[in-house]
Length: 180
Image: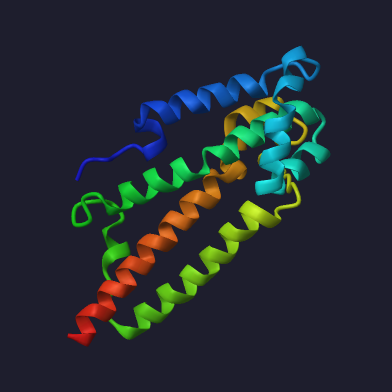
């Protein structure tokens, strides 16, 4: 089995958007056109409260707000591509064990993990108060923001939700096999 790259490294438009996010992160905090995007940032803050939370806690609030607004806007795309890559080549992929549910014990385990995954994704998308981790200090470092801010800006939650949906599909397949 040959090793495959993650979906965000193989989809050209996602790579372009990640490069764009990196450019946003490297902008000076007083760039004049940041005010042009203020309404977009405010709108995204209504949909995803962590956008405003990260901007408030950041050393460079306008840049962080724009970065997180664009990052959270990409969340549906990350979800779609992560789910499609989980579903592609189910038998030959590195994650084929995700689709293998052969007992009620594994079923219950996956169901509990799916519920935890939903909770983690929900917190990440809607209730994150702008957490800043020492491993990835995006609130204080533009370099850290450029390299990994997209993970905290919705992509991590989207990938988590894609895993949950794939797990639920596998659980329903298991139930379908048991009911017949």
